[in-house]
Image (cartoon, rainbow, N blue to C red; front, side, top):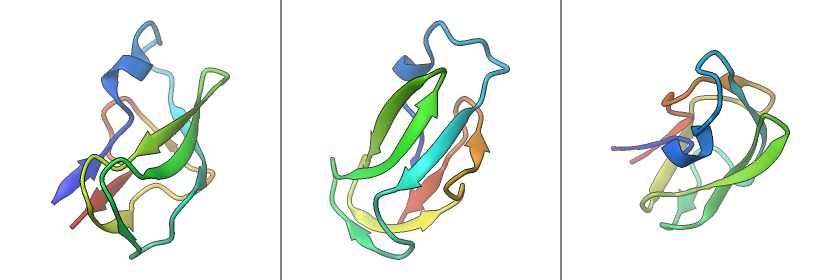
Amino acid sequence: MTTVTLKAEAWEGVDTAVEALVDKWLVREGEAVQAGQPLANVVLVKSSLDITAPAGGRIQILVPAGGTFARGQPIATLT
């Protein structure tokens, strides 16, 4: 199982109390994805970023669209 998180570089200079927002998912629950495929668009301190798949597999979404997540928190898993 592989976890999907927002890369640490995106959080550089951001207060640890700040959370990011999942703006929208670009894939559906249970869909097969390929490594490098865009999975979700997130917003962090007025910046819009895409999260890509670190590996291939079937996605299980942990944070729904409109939900927030903290630094290092997985937003999905790939199996």
